[in-house]
Length: 560
Ligand SMILES: Cc1ncc(C[n+]2csc(CCOP(=O)(O)OP(=O)(O)O)c2C)c(N)n1
Ligand SMILES: [Mg+2]
Image (tube, rainbow, N blue to C red):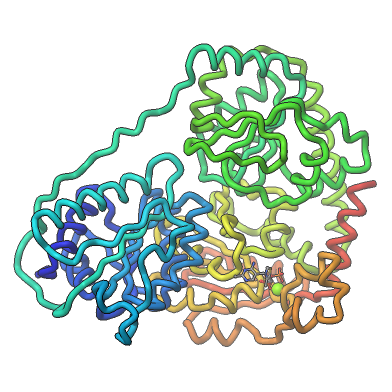
């Protein structure tokens, strides 16, 4: 039995035809036609999560794991507004979410009806397209709706993928069901051409590359991409380009350069001009490192090319001279034959510096007392290889990036907008579709903020949650302004004494804790032991003042 609402039947048919079958529903009455239809068709995989904020972040993680769009379904009113944070994050991370919000007919909006808000275009800044379906079910209205739905579904995955919003006004009665198959609906297919460079343009680009002595390639946040990794590694070998990566770019070839924050600290006091690139080529999402942005804004390249299939003009370093409307892998592939062998001194300069700062970092971390920096080093030694790591915003992502990447690990983080409000939900969503051990490392405030992530039935035994409990928002102690304010403890740090233990118990998670180095090493052994067949939470207690002192000291040490 499916709903008698023809627009909902048609929408379900179009989703099914495209194989978009992962659905996250939040309960409600106005969305009953969607709930009744999707759950009646076995090909749809429906989950239910009550908190729409968490549901949308869960869907984001799920879409990342499955590498395909995920559908969200909610009721009207503030239910829909609660999707907004994750919609913004998905927009800036290029993740396709198909958002279906139930609504009342237009003529009841602002008429003292309950659970009613102005819902058209509520995500207008964070979606590629938003439509409101017509209410009437005439042939013309159904044709019009199908065309618009087709366009939304095509746009969500083409160029730079992004969320789309389909608002669905529905008239009562909402619960009538009929015994029938989904209708046949015409699909408007999309043939997405791989953009090729014209011969002349390609020749000019290759000439530029061959004339540049110092080429720096910035690999921003992106999904693992083995084909790109291969072509870039060959380019490094052939022409000595420097590829700078953070863990979140998921490029791990040892010929690339990492540890960017410490590396930047290491070169700042040196003959910095020798590191300045002639040609900068960037692709992917954002970099976490602020120091890198500062370095490049001060030491601008002569040319900066940004590679973007949807033509984004990212002038992050105030030196953009060309946008190449192309996937990075196709771009480097097209160039590879024409690029000449080159002297590797620029690459050597960066690689030598990287080795030096990494050595200083390791010596320093070995010598210090227990703190967040040390805890991340220990965690890094104990996390199993070939795993998935989710990094919470605030200092966890920074600490993790200071240390070496875990072998064969894939890294994810909500860096589109860097919110602390959905780190755990996104990790839970990802882990629910992953057959690997998934570890999320996040701060205490981020954990409590998003603890509703644990309020659903889709938490797999493969999930490991590490809460770094440092008594509040430690990041604000690391930056000069807030740490010097009289309002620091109450209004920046937001001092926190509540422990995660009670919540772990409430949600039925196995609980571990550690307060010192030996305790953490032991807890990690148990946490990752093959015998640990249950989802588990490890709470690591550290001291705020010690953390801040040693974090600052690290950067002094690597400058030496
Ligand atoms: C939704 C949202 N609100 C506020 C902020 C500002 N903010 C950035 S970091 C932070 C503190 C996070 O504390 P915690 O999770 O304990 O991490 P720590 O700083 O201790 O590493 C806050 C409030 C944000 N990024 N996102
Ligand atoms: Mg904290």
